[in-house]
Image (cartoon, rainbow, N blue to C red):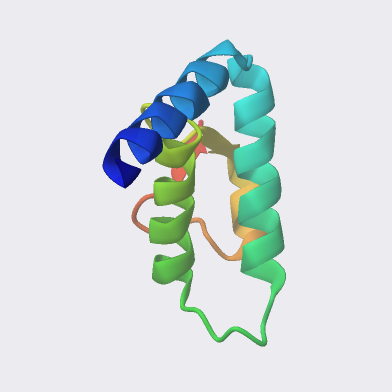
Length: 88
C-alpha cells in the first residue's frame, strides 16, 4: 500500500516537472551550482559539486546539465571540471 502511494506521488511530481519551462529549469540549475559552489564550509571538491549538480539537473527533468558561460565557469573555478558543460 505504501509503495502504491509513493509511486502515485512520484508520478504526480514527474508530471508537474514536465510542465515547467526548460528556461526555468536551467535557471534553477545555474542558481544551484552557484550556491553550492560558493559554500566553503561544506568542503566539497569541485568535481563533487559538478557531479551533484548533474544529479540535480536530472532530478528536475533535464536530460543533460545546461551549458555554463565560459567566463562564469572560470570565475567559479569550474572551467576544466568534468561534468561542467562550457558554452563556447
